[in-house]
Length: 133
Image 1 (tube, helix red, strand yellow):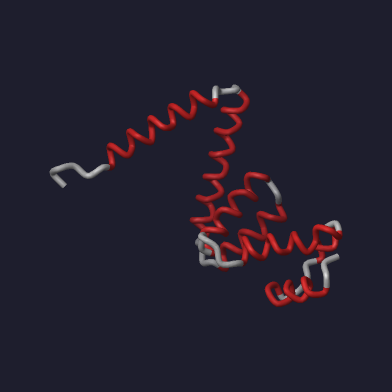
Image 2 (cartoon, helix red, strand yellow):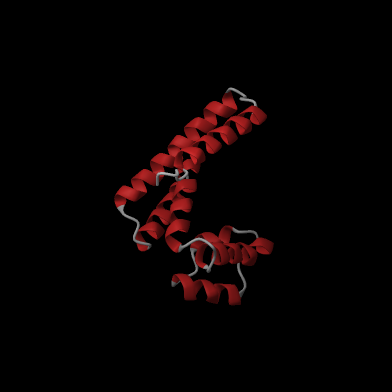
């Protein structure tokens, strides 16, 4: 279980010490809370809204009902709409789908990178302002 100081921090941030924290091995419990606190709750380059969308996507792709529930609720607190949640989860599914195809068919990574770079270059050219703009 986490140290008393860590338990107090959890209570300050979450209103309680989640029971699942008891399942973390002793040397990792304080550190695990620190990662959760610093990345998930702390000030970072991503907004709370952006973090919630990333976390919901990852949870859905991993098919973790615990994480999916937690991060959907977190997203709702960050004022993510139900339509946005649905789209986020659909995007996670699409990414997982194509990842399965790429990995299962053992697509050559170097060729994939080269093609992606060409696609990005093409799109940038298409979106670049013209002299007429």
